Amino acid sequence: MSRPPEEKTAESPYILWKSVNSQTFHSHIARSLGNILVLVQEAGKRILDVYGQKFEVFLKSDLSPLTLADQRSHEVLFEGLPRILDVPVLSEEGRTIEFAERSSWQTFWSADPLDGTKEFVRKSGDFCVSIGLVHDRSPLFGVIYIPVENRVYFGSMDLGGHTLSGDLIPALSGLPAVDVLARSQRLDSDRASAEKEWVLIGSVSHGGEISPEVLKKLRKKHPFSVKSVGSAIKFCRIAEGAADFYPRVGTTMEWDTAGGQAIVESAGGGLISATTGQPLTYNKESLENPDFLCFGGRFAQEYPEMLSLSPGS
Ligand SMILES: Nc1ncnc2c1ncn2[C@@H]1O[C@H](COP(=O)(O)O)[C@@H](OP(=O)(O)O)[C@H]1O
Ligand SMILES: [Mg+2]
Image (spheres, rainbow, N blue to C red):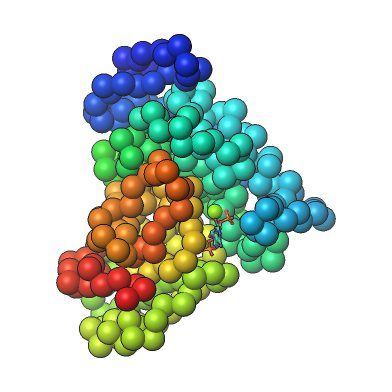
């Protein structure tokens, strides 16, 4: 595996990529792209193995569900991601890593091995594997794989946003971005035609409590329909122009958004804090996200003034 310049520290088992500029970072991702997609599909296959059987549901300390599928997918990613890029993995299903330990990380994988566990348990199909590669507190690259659709979405500002049928992934092992992109479709969050109805997308299980006043303000600007979809698949729908905006009120964690943010941004959209109006940042002391607004290119272009409209206001 080729690597950018690196520097080991005595305290950390990881290689800290001090003074790596983002171009070096992007070149490395471009070289490894085929292997990354193969790995994420492998995690998805482990999830589907469990989905097809009778499985037990455990409750975590926050009362959210956990299954064997979350754990199997975590094992694949926790072992495989550092083989692609040898930086720490912050996984929803990994051990808790205190801020004192992770505050020095410049680059790390933010992984949700099975996003949408509730939907997985309900067998609605709305679940995915979501991976973001965070560098200098921003998600520069993201991958979301949807097992039931056998489809992957990925993107970075350098590569742009793309989607690809999972049938094509096994043949991508060892191939760099130029070969992967030749087989992919470009994502464009502004693709929706002007006459098509606008779509607000929201959670099936959580955080749909957007205040009626805000909904009224939004409707005054432009009528829209509402679609409910579970998990980070919502970001894929924004990135491909199938939905226009996704306001989220309530708890989400960094691993829920890192991959999706990179994909949406690479497709011309954005994901901003409802309080600051700035893109979400990562490796915060608290891993909870603020309320946010995610939007596609059409929304951003036609209604820039709404970008400062807090979903919770
Ligand atoms: N009260 C809460 N505490 C922590 N995370 C929450 C939460 N409510 C929702 N989430 C997050 O929202 C995700 C599901 O998103 P959605 O509601 O859009 O389908 C969950 O992902 P997991 O399924 O990976 O736990 C979970 O991380
Ligand atoms: Mg999640």
